[in-house]
Image (cartoon, rainbow, N blue to C red; front, side, top):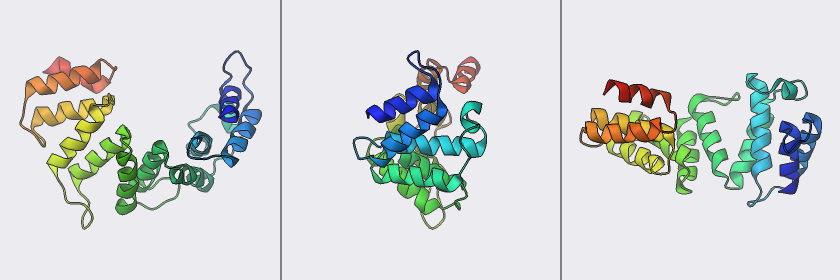
Length: 206
């Protein structure tokens, strides 16, 4: 845990320290080599760094030092997921849902990873399952408005603003539950209070 913290402090230049990307990555790699179920964070962070370098949306100071590597990024996420780290379950679910990091789109694998995270009550995974139930996956998952509603509600009750917005929409148009503008406003208000821009727009419309 200490090595992970040192890595983040150096990487981002926190606590009055000067940013030192090379040293930060070295500390994260040391922490990752000792990762266990209590300390999977360095693996996931390295996955994010390599993914950011692939996509070109990371700090220029990091992309100058780190070459994007989709396979390495995937391997770090997979290692964190094996240690039962829910944010990594969500990452792998997204990777297979959208075909990221050179992986194929695979609904079955996407659902499997989201389900693992949802079992641990991860709100991002719960909302992702809601999305899958909304569309269904031919031969793999039966479409169900009711299940979409229930999974979104689980995530919304944990305060995830995207899920609160989804609940507002489901209530407004009657997906998985009776149409209710009062209920829609209540959920949109919750999301808007977390600066969810679409929820703010919806409240102005209703």
